[in-house]
Image (cartoon, rainbow, N blue to C red):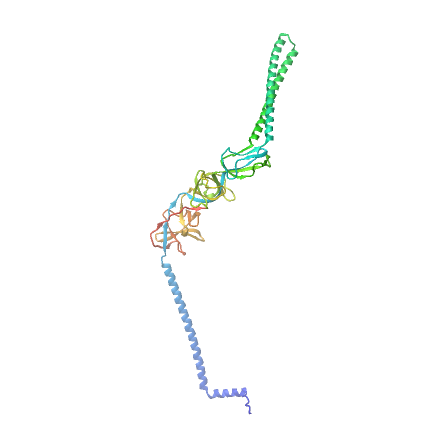
Length: 429
């Protein structure tokens, strides 16, 4: 089989040159085609660029027109008229209801409990006997002291008799000495004997007083054998029973009962500094307990510490609550509602009328079709509404939910006549 050898490169070049030389018209056509093709591509690119520029310019003009329309549009807003408020502000403060009086009774006589008349929960009145302590040693000491007192009283009477006798003897001796019937020595003896008897009477009288004081002390101690209620109340704890040994030691005395007065309860609350100047003793208050919905208990601001605590800037205040019905108990958690008079009138605004930005707090006021920004000085804020101390005037119409782009002097319109904002009871806790 015969194989054809490949054509060498030199032969191909010679052939190409021969073809070109043979057909110059074809070469010119090729160059012309390439030139027109390049011009077409350039024209196409230029057309695309021009189209993009035109479209961009159109979009930009449309955006400018839209912005101008938006700027020219007058937003419609809702407005409400505000008015000055000078009624008391209610503040809500948490507190714990405590017995008005409470005490733990200790033994003042050493002995055994021979009688117990009350238990936990017993209601007692002042002077009721709660328990009786049997203290025979103390009773014996009292009897002994009374016997010694009787002896000293007899010695006092005897000293008085000796004094009277010495006085009579001295009187007679003095006359006899003056008349010369008796010696001066005897006169001096009788005179000094009288002075001695007078001193003996004073000593006997002092002994009687000292022994009487001892008897009185023992009488008081034996009186402590009867444990009585110091005030009206209820027994809240009992630590002894019949037969229990109790001691009257001042350091390790035995506690007997705990008693609390619950017909009146006291609640301690801490009033903030900004309410201090409006709070006065004698003001009325109400107390509510979460577990008793719908029930309100009346109380009175009874006393305060008169000095604010430096750490919290609050004033310790006590409210006395009437609990004659017995519905409340000591230790309950409750809310004290106080009506504190305002020191000056304020304006109350809904929270949606307040603007907060880098300039602080302000409100938008509607006046003659324009929006005016007013800087606010707040006195209180409970979340739903705010109390404005300064920045507004009576009759101002504030804009609710003002536009985001609100600026001073902006043109605005209203959809309906303004209404008057009705403030709810402003309460703070």
